[in-house]
Image (cartoon, rainbow, N blue to C red; front, side, top):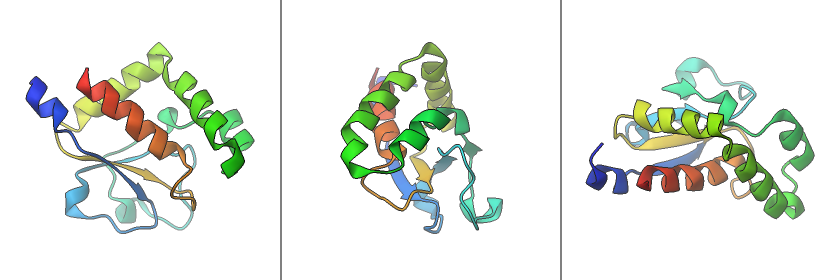
Length: 128
């Protein structure tokens, strides 16, 4: 992908309980667990990247407790630094074929969730 296109890549974050929209582009579920009450059709996903979600142990430890947010971000970024995860993220960026990417998550907390961390990591990776 030419450098100019990479710089303009847009990565959005959206709850699984919000309706899909055409401007979402390539929609990717980034949870380990499927969101309750949502069908495949409702989510309109390009892929389910469950392996990019935080590990089960990290997810359970965090429990969406805002006081653990800073530590959660550090631990999750450490998990995403693994070469296997880097390759998964590069594949996700390639799969989007230059379309906007919308990271879909199920958490109620819109400010403290893995999709926000992943959005930042992917944004930096797409600029490389």
